[in-house]
Image (cartoon, rainbow over all chains, first blue to last red; front, side):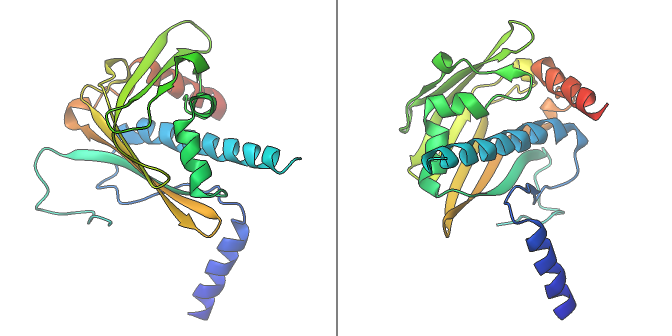
Length: 61
Length: 158
């Protein structure tokens, strides 16, 4: 359990910025849906970058 | 919340959805606003290879209101409209909109996008569910502007 906790802690440390996208609860691996999923993943990545930008602007940097 | 991966009681007409969660380093009010402010939507909503002219974005953040925009090919002049209507909207917690079919993207039936925003300290956990993608749409995914995205992927991978 400690070891697993350590693993989790390391993973969290490696992900100090919340940029990882997580896919879950898909009924089955349908390759043909990858394109649709990829569009949303990249949209979310751009939204993340956009939010970083406006938050930094708001902070007066 | 998670549905079982295999469930013999699933209806025979398989319906699939895109389900993603992401934690943003911003409070729900800010994330929600990024979805309803036309200027902001224009900056992040277009898939790679496409751009959204800010003047094409029309957002009426109320039930029955419009969520309209146009995606324009960056390296061409083809225009792909997105026409959707809000089914539910609750600032800053929830946005649900139904999009008209986009045959040019292989989407031949209306789809519903549900986006929820949950405060996590100063951050926001966003959960997005989009679909259904039905068997009828299988094989359409390489159609139209999706091929632009696919080609770009090839370029980036190469």
